[in-house]
Length: 255
Ligand code: MG
Ligand code: MG
Image (cartoon, rainbow, N blue to C red; front, side):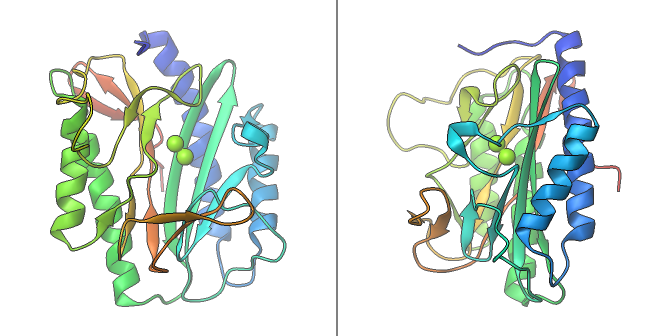
């Protein structure tokens, strides 16, 4: 079932979202050539705990880190490691969730390290734009798949592909709640146009976009999802409340 949040609950998710946004600002500042994802993970965890929050992913199904990193052909869910050191020309996705006073928030950005290829720059731009195209549809009276469709049309219109193996999600008292929020329109099954969107729904909308084919493989570590064809992948995510007048982005950064 889809939980409808009241104003107070949305303020609680906003509070968690502020911490998530602040952590992502710190991570973007620290993401330069030579730093390991391990060190960035520690900075994120320390800041969240200092603010009284718990890193939401740490220990989730035994995930060992606080941040999910995904470098270049990695799509999502990479494990922080002392051996993963950022290099110029990389693109790195950083996905962070926080839990405080009973509520979760979840957001991700992908950033370039130094100079990256024009293709990589375009991938980042289109993926970010597709997130905002999806968010724009997150309003009462629209259907869930209006979000999905807007993302898919923008991505495929640029010749890139949407990852279908992972989807966005409702969020609130749980990190992952109904409904699932696909970044594409499922061709079969019982989706129809998706549920009707209502004020008080809170969604984590998170397109994952590949330059090449959408196919995914999971590495032997059991977590890291990579593109099967080895092409670059990007990921952006916001936690968004549906307000009476339209979307309210709770994880928007003040930078
Ligand atoms: Mg996330
Ligand atoms: Mg998420």
